[in-house]
Image (cartoon, rainbow, N blue to C red; front, side, top):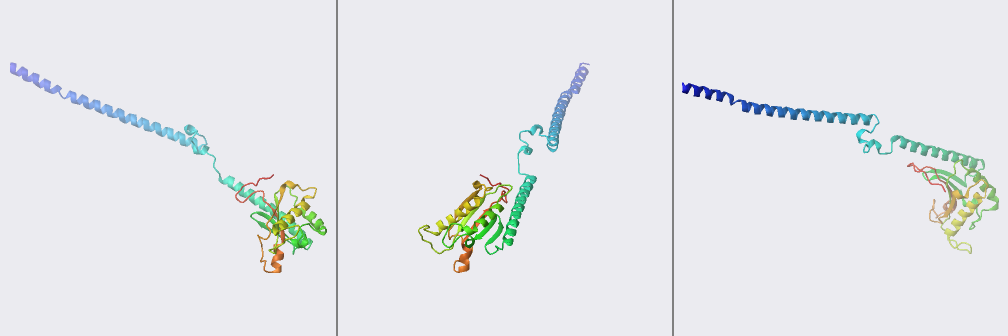
Length: 253
């Protein structure tokens, strides 16, 4: 009888032993589900935040990236580039209109042999042979051509002021007189005297004009012939653009 009781008690104890590992397994499963649930919740929150940020960016708002958003950094846009190109082209058209007026004046006065115009990247270049302005070896504008200079000055009055550079050039025949020790001095004084004759016009603003001389060092023809030397003896008038090809606005005085 006693043996049966002990056996029964042992069986009852053995039956309850499985509860501990079962409880541990449930605890582990519960912890696993909690971790999975927490991870799932965090990912969902992150997705919601990312979705909100992208919506704000595409809607033009800054969202949580307000201070670091790339949309806040100013960059040259295609529209700005198009505007610069448009301004440059408009300025080139304006210079072209000035050239047409000058060419018309040259044709009407039959000055094709003494005047030439060229539209370049640096501006509108007017080339004037020295024979229509100066006597040989002299720098003063001949009195008979002063009315012509005044007419040219009227063509250089613009709605928007432009910088105008007067440049003197000579051939390579040396000059050494009491007035001019070299071709540099002669070319510089010719440019300066022509500038003075231009700005003598009452409507001309001298602050937009400058002069320089290159002497014999920028020839446009060979100095080996009389015809080439005649071309090299010249005064050039450069009407500068208001806007360069890269969109830069040239400073005015």
